[in-house]
Length: 166
Image (cartoon, rainbow, N blue to C red; front, side, top):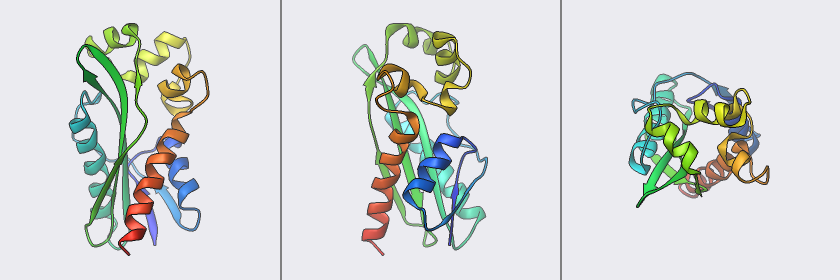
């Protein structure tokens, strides 16, 4: 059995490899079918499910995993959010969410102008490809939590639910 991850982003692929070392993990580019920058828990979850379903439907008898990062609002504050979905060969769907942290107002302002979080983070930090490295979570936790670790936690939750039902 193989696992197909709905992304070519190395942080997402490596998080799945670390949780499923016994399986072959393959990244593939699929559409999330949501905005490039999801702006709610619902939209971020929908993107993760869409990615997982697309992977599973293109690769029958295998597992599809979708991991989606987004932002969500509580009152006037903007939080980082992330969701994952696992779709198995029987079309069962398992979902999980992970860490949330408050984003600074400067980040919120950039996102409200229609930019993606990755682009805003690159400008904010004067770095390149923050989304493929430490991520916003890594920047705003001063390196205590990195993006791969954040997604690894979500993938562990997915694997636990899926294995429970086997």
